[in-house]
Structures are given as structure tokens and as C-alpha cells.
Length: 486
Image (cartoon, rainbow, N blue to C red; front, side, top):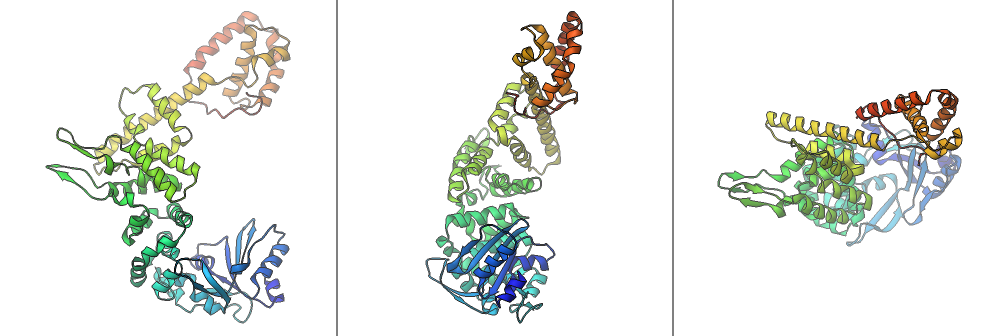
């Protein structure tokens, strides 16, 4: 690539987030390259030399994206840009020097360039004291904040994401500029807003990102339902806790155990239905009956607004709708059928559901925490028992009776059950894997030995095996059978 840049007489610079992360010691798999010269032709030659497939070229903006097994390389011509008031897409793009290109970037810590070829080879260009801001761990715009944010309002959300991810502060004048320009976010496509929001949730400190969203007013503009959870109301001596503060605590608990952005978002939104369902009953106090059902409907609307995909939206909605069910199952005397119904309803998100429900224990009373966690763990153990019993009830030899009759040249009868039992025991004992081919091979191996044995003894063996089998509840993890196990 460097040889190609020299052959084309291009100046090549490492810039942006990849350079920033390297300077912070974070490492970088993706590379951002600024090119003073023909970036598209350089990308073509780089792709050819690396044996890459199709290269994404964007001629209007003079950018290209090369996807390699090790990561992505983005090429962009050094440029000036001008914008119209109603769009964050550049109206005009023209060639520029590397110094002019750095001035249009979002933050000083991203406005650094390291020369790979050309007159600045081996030199770090730092016009805006980006190195100093890296040391001070602060985000600041290279130009006046209003200029930077009016050109591209999405940069305001990026400021929040970077601050939370990098554990940086936001310079006072930059934070003021964000608040003053916040209304400009209305010109940004919903898909881009949702993408930034999900990146915040997937980052190192999503709770701080949400707090900054609240502080800057973006939460009110983008997810106002969250702000409706804020506040405490009191009637006589009865008051309910601030639902927003509680929800942020739950979210932090989820963050401590799960990197999944959807489960983290469920932690923030699990009680979003409470403001619409809260009632004061003199004999009881504050109630929120049905808030999980109302909350699920609200969450569906939020997911649509943030352009969260259908599968993730369904998962988020289900997490909110079912978040009270495990709590209700911690009472003594709950039947296996009630536990089984929850397991069926939660299905493939059961583990995430339990993470969310455990995170919902936020009381400051350590005795209550211990009691709730004890009940919760007992309920989770019972789920394991029920699941194991159900798997045992449905478990059977991957080689079915009809095939055993053919392979062993036997008529229908009790001996077929003996063969199936031997195969099942071999699987449970770890002698063979739970796979059709292994089970068939094992059947052929034991066939002659079984057929030579005493029929009455074999039938007693079958009866004994059934008694032992009923006592097993949890000692074997059953994977799904492979082909042939249908």
C-alpha cells in the first residue's frame, strides 16, 4: 500500500479513531487513512495487492472501503466540505491539504495525522493540541463547537459515545455547544441515530452515556418515555421510589454481567410502563398493575423509532413483557407447570430474562437482597430440575425402533426396547456422543452379544433401567440430535 501511494505520488496519513486508539494503547484492527491525491485509485491498487474482493467506492465523496480478514481500511481524500442547513451530507466536496482536512473533523483527539508517505513521513501532525487533550482525557472540537455541530449534528451523539467509551470529559464550551445545537439532531436520519444509540449501549459505560443523554436533553428529544420515569410522588406517608434512578441501577447491574446491548436496554426500559399504570390505593399504597404489558407496547414503539431490527425488537419487547414472571415464581409452592410455562414463553431468551430479573434486585437493605437472591437462585435451580426431567422424558435413542428391527432382523417386540435402552445408556454414560452415526455403529457392535443373552434377563434389565432413568434429573446436558435423529 505504501509502495502504491509512492507510485501514485500520494501523501498517505493514518488519521482518526485508529490513530487515537493506538496513542491510547487500545490497539486498532480497522484503519482510517487520509490521502492527499487519488484515494480511489490507491484503494483499487491496495485491494489488488491484498487479493481483496469487491471494494466499496464512493466517487462523490472520494472515499473507499476495503474489507480484509484482519479488519477494514477506509481511504478518504483529504477534503474541504460545505453543508446546507437541512442536511448533514456535504453539499460540495473539494480537495484540500492534510491540515485543512483535519480542521473539519469532529474532535481534536481525532484531528491527528501520522505521515506514512510524503513530506510529513514519520511526523505527527497536531494543529489543535489533540495530544494534550488525550493526556487531559477531554473532548473538544477543533473549530467553534457551533460550526462543528451544525455541519454534522450526529457528532453531538458521537461526543456522548466517546466520552462514555473512553472515560473522557467533555470540555465546558463543547458541552454548551451541544446543548445549543441539540435541536439540529432533527435533520439526522433515524437509522443513524439508532445506530449511535446502540453503540452507546454496547460500549464500556452505557449508564454514563445515558446520563449524558439526559444532561444534554437528547433523551427528552429521542426517548422521552425514559424521562417520564423520573421523579417521586408522595401521598401521606406513602411514596414510591424514583423509577428512573432505579432503572439506571438495574441497567448497571445488567452491564456488570452482560455485553448484550438489547439486554442492557431492557434494563433501562423494563419499568417504562409504570408512569402510565401507577395508582394509589389507600389500603395498599402505590401500585403499578400491568406495567409490564403496557411497557412492552411502549418499548415496541421506541424500538421502531430507533430503527432497531425486527428480531432485536421482538427480543427487547419480550424481555420487558416477561420481566415480572420470574419474580412472581420465587414464592414457595409454585408448581412445575408454572415454571414450565415461563420456560416455554421465554424460550430462547430465558438466560437473558434471568439476567434482567436478577439485576432488578436493587434494594439497599442487605437482608432483603440476601433473601431475594436466595429465592431467585432456588427458583433457577428448580428450572434446571424441570428442564432436565422434561429432557429425560423426551429423550430417546437416535436409532429408532423400526430401523433396529431391520438392522437386527427382529420382529416388533420387547427386545427392540432393550436395544434402544442399551444405546441410551451408552449416551448417558458418555460412551458415545448423542449422534445418529455413533448410535448406529454402537448398535451394530453390541447386536450379536445382546441376541445371545437370556431373554428374561434382558427384560429385567429393561425394567431396572426404567426405574433408574426416572431418578435422573440434572446430571446430563442433552444437545439436539444430529441428522438421523428425527
